[in-house]
Image (cartoon, rainbow, N blue to C red; front, side, top):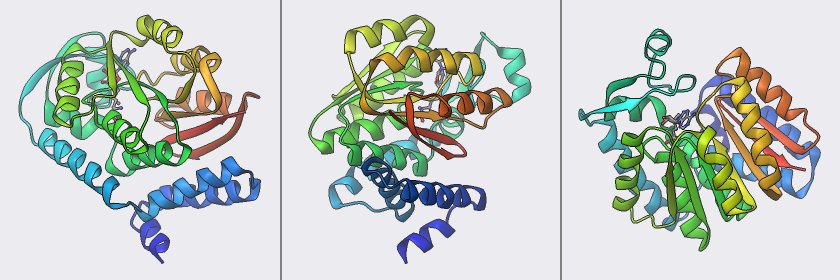
Length: 273
Ligand SMILES: C[S@@+](CC[C@H](N)C(=O)[O-])C[C@H]1O[C@@H](n2cnc3c(N)ncnc32)[C@H](O)[C@@H]1O
């Protein structure tokens, strides 16, 4: 009953994707696919226990404050995937420093409550420990991941962000939430990812949420694959954002190193073979 209510509360296109994904996952029938199906169901049903609810409320209160902030900051635009700019502004502002309000950035670039909760549930259910995120922004998705790790009693997240002003606000946000299991690295993914991977060893969970460009996404995929632990999860955002991102997602799902892939329209989840 809770599932039926939950599925009708989300958009038609997404709920069809979720039902198709559940069908495939249960048909596959492996432990991992059943675990993933469980995560989807719990996300739709918004199932939480008391401790989880406390963390979610804290992060959502922070989101609310950020969304209503009119504070202006200077941010470096990283081109494709900076969702807080419309397409026309993107072309004009590529590689430029632009002025945005914190509220505008939070409303347009941070993952919504639904998707953040999905990430949270993935961390909780899969019992992952070493996490990496490409694209911190104001730290909303990072906070969900870090909170899930705290609840599970172990693990840390390293998150990469190119815009210094955003990284600095994100750090403040982690501090406000008492999340001491987050390490933020400032710099372009192209310049920081390699070092981070070499220093951290095997990753259980990687979330790519920035630089949504076909070539870049495939390059990051190739770069992280050798550093993924057995049964690691790789989550990609905006897989249908452009023709190029559609192609990148297709290439990744057809890769022999990927055992399971789930297309949820906005987000794609892969489990390593
Ligand atoms: C969509 S936002 C991330 C949102 C965040 N994960 C959340 O849900 O709260 C993408 C972020 O990636 C950063 N970014 C994009 N391309 C980048 C690159 N090549 N190097 C470093 N940062 C980049 C942008 O500055 C932006 O803050």
